[in-house]
Length: 264
Image (tube, rainbow, N blue to C red):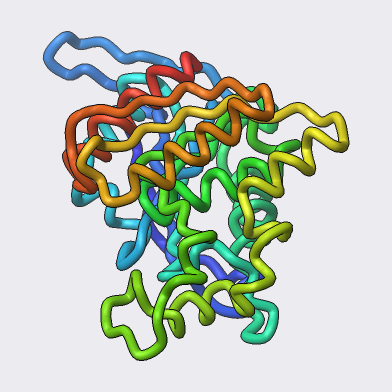
């Protein structure tokens, strides 16, 4: 396993931003005197962090490097702040475009990553789970698989958030800083239900979807609601409700399960 960490200049974000990349390029087993050669190009997971995170958060809190090595896949982790992976046109910070287009093109040009849709997945935890669903559906010609772990599917709930609230995930001002006019989220590219409808209406294939949520997670009902919506639309995701809360332990276990589920 090889770990690259650094920063790139992004046109979409109008600035420099950090990334971490795990590659299965040197699986040398010193004690056995063996070297495992992984076939190129590498199958790839683009992994999105949650609120308060950055590209190094998975390296610190999960076994993602070992999961990548054990499954012979590449993992690309961008850093996108508390953006909810939204294109913020007014501030020239196009986070959706950055991850869904620029980052994919850049990493494929530098590293031996597969260009095939079926070899490319996008996944995330919490805010990153929402981002994975949004970007996986929006850029469905790029991503063949979506993993949403404890996804922050809060785009309908933000209409109830209050002005002056100090807690970030109840603050109307914070939601507006991400999504703009909250009344315009519905039936936009920031609405995961609308994105499903758009694919169905255009007779386009929906990426395979894996969702997992803890039975004591404060986001449980939002995830159950989205799962029910998918079922109504005759989309059949893998959906798991397991014991646990909104924790790194839950994320670690289910990112691992998602990678196994991919069966790359």
